[in-house]
Amino acid sequence: MSLDVDAVIVGAGFAGMYMLHRLRQKGFKARVFESGTGVGGTWYWNRYPGARCDVESVQYSYQFSPELEQEWEWTERYATQAEILRYANHVADRFDLRRDITFETKVTKAAFDEASNTWRVETDRGDAVTARFVITAMGCLSSPNTPKIAGLEDFAGPTYHTGNWPHEGVDFSGRTVGVIGTGSSAIQSIPIIASQARHLTVFQRTANYTIPAHNRPLDPDHVRQVKANYAELRRRARSKPAGIDFTINQASAIETPEEERRRIYEERWSYGGLGFMAAFSDLQLNDDSNRTAADFVRAKIREVVKDPELVDKLTPRNSFGCKRLCVDTGYWETFNRPNVTLVDVSDEPIERVTSTGLRARGEDYVFDCLVLATGFDAMTGALLKVDIRGRDGQSLRDKWQEGPKSYLGLTMAGFPNLFTITGPGSPSVLTNMLPSLEQHVEWIADCLEHMRDRGATVIEADGNAEEAWVAHVRDVAGYSLRSACSSWYVGANIPGKPRVFMPYIGGFPAYIERCDAIVRNGYEGFALSS
Ligand code: FAD
Ligand code: NAP
Image (cartoon, rainbow, N blue to C red; front, side):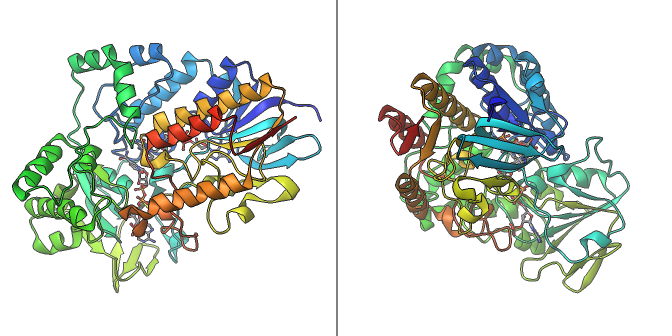
């Protein structure tokens, strides 16, 4: 069978774009398929009001090109979706990526042919491409979750999902709106929707913790300083468990005297953002320590929200940071507005959507438009939508029936020459995803180059190495309080999804070291053949 390209890359978000660039640099021929009409992935699809990153932009950006780092100017501490999308488009133009990307084309099937050791990739447009390698760059949070609420199709007004927002935007002025969900997307969009809408009703199943963003325009002097020392900033970030350069306080929360503890929390609160998680080293390891952070944030809700009944509803009961921590601008303040109502559906699921709104707790709520801020079938959703078949025609769906299994979150036994960027079993969503996906891209590109240099055409993870990695991912997750709550990290938001803590929580530096050691040891845990 003749080869059309060396590699098919699925997805043109930040991962797929850089993968294409890196492979080209090494002299490989690649074709990218992207279901959207443009690049940017997350930032192409999630155009809801208030969407922005919550890792500071100077860090939530590529580091593979020092020239790109120097020439791009971020304008805000946390850039808006529009600005990040402009950046993605700038990267596509700067590195001339579009000529190898086929847009508006979804990969539907990928099958490994054992006779020729090649993959045949099919799309919804009838393409059939033969490639030595398939590299998925399909995103961890790219398969929107539409909850199975009875009557959803009966609603007469428009329904919007935050993860697939209309490109022309939505003007909520003078309209009545219902929002389902109180995760990060809801917490970012609710204050803005409330400021436009005539009335907003928020349906909350689980109250969430959020930390103020204190977003602001970036001071040009600060940016100059960052740019002058970018390599050092990136090096420090790489040495931190989340791949983000914030100061980690090594002290235990519970062993720190109360007054000092409060001072530290206040300091982190005033600074804002995800660095709050690093206020103490044991917030995810020790229940008592965790409770101190939870209590601190709960007290903040009481300070902000005026109505005690609302305070009670908005107060999270689960452990702090066990669901993905949110970062907001004026979220709790929004509930003091006279045009906002909160409906707690924690103990009684929403009964049904009706033609005019929805029915919950025995009451009918009427609105003009409905917003589903209901998240994603995370980490495995996009991958399992494609019919992926490895050796003996085994499907990935079968292999992952009891939860995802991989070696390093990058490769799978039985699926030779298939790589999954930020796949389950890698640090991915527990880190700043830009450096994480860059590390995967570089590891994969180096691997392909190594194979070419030694005449190898097939690489496959060894079943035992995979089992050992899966066990390691599970074991380290067991130490963290995060594995114990019903979050999308464990698939709890999707009915019937196996409960497995999917990302690797051992930290970015430990993960990089493991990946590098495997290479140093001659691709330990892999079989390479010609
Ligand atoms: P994506 O950006 O998800 O891109 C995947 C692409 O693959 C998509 O364009 C999709 O259309 C395409 N695709 C999928 N399946 C197919 C198929 N079968 N055929 C063809 N194309 C396909 N991370 C952070 O680190 N910091 C943040 O501040 C942050 N903020 C976020 C905010 C939001 C609203 C969301 C949803 C996520 C956020 N994330 C954040 C995570 C974010 O997903 C990653 O940072 C990053 O953008 C992922 O890039 P990616 O290229 O791996 O995947
Ligand atoms: P999410 O965190 O999964 O939140 C979904 C929300 O919808 C939850 O409140 C969930 O309740 C609720 N929900 C789902 N089904 C429901 C149902 N049937 N009835 C009632 N409520 C229902 O999704 P997300 O907010 O889109 O965020 C996903 C991830 O994307 C984030 O965790 C983060 O990693 C990333 N993100 C980042 C940012 C940022 O600030 N940069 C912004 C958006 C997203 P339960 O909690 O009870 O399940």
